[in-house]
Image 1 (spheres, rainbow, N blue to C red):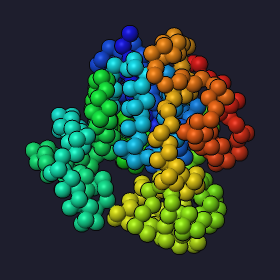
Image 2: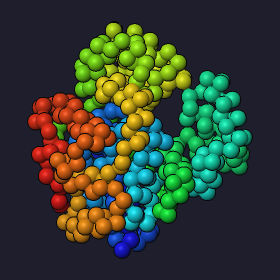
Image 3: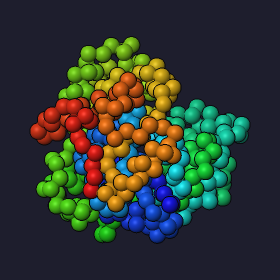
Length: 390
């Protein structure tokens, strides 16, 4: 049996994702694909457009064999934390042969070389990184400059492509944990990850979300069901009242303890939260060259959930787990296979895995998400939702 792993958000699942799944099977001959998917909140620090079960169902209906939830605490981190958590989870299953991921151009050799530099962090790299940071660059920009200086033969633009950034983090994570999983790059087709315009054949998930937000029906061709068949979409602005309530209750000391806050950022957040009129306005007013929008969104989400630097450090000491959201009927045998092979617990019922702070954060995330939907959803869905079998 050959098993390929994919890390994704499927926010939402679209034709480009289906192409990736199909191409992965063709290229490596996989019998099954296990996807580690973000839950109800994403790496951008925002709520997913549809809940995790809706998105998992779409993936299962279109080629994925089994969907695991990436714990909230990894799903909402920077690219590095996101990739490290997902790759560690796939590796702990002890049965995944290949990790398939998209790249935005034929850059794999350079990405592989760069991943070794990032995993080992030689003195030359550290010196270049420090110099770039001292100039005021954000960490991702500073790191790209340092790597580019050490690999001058590589096209500089490859370090700025979002899919390449994630690919680099997957490769680095595989290297750091000395995983036996083999990387499988798949060239991305159509629109880029961050494009907000719909393409002719394939479009980015972001472009589809933007179309859904404006009520455009043009995105229908990239989805596999009519839009009306999905639950009402959830957008980041739905977070704003809850976020503002939390921020206005917090002191600057409270905000200063939140994971990712440093260099006096707490004072800016505290000040802007008093007058912000919308979620996007708050993000814009707090952001800077050093703190780009994506990082601010994650920090604001951590404020809402009370994720302090101390709590984040504590989470690292708690064991991983593999929470199964759904499985294809023709792949049910994977459950028993994983139970035999995996070094971490395989969870199919939330009630069977109490007293794990990482898992409790996933449950909290579902509870908050249930308040963001057009019609407030019943609570405790993690305990009432049956395992998806399609």
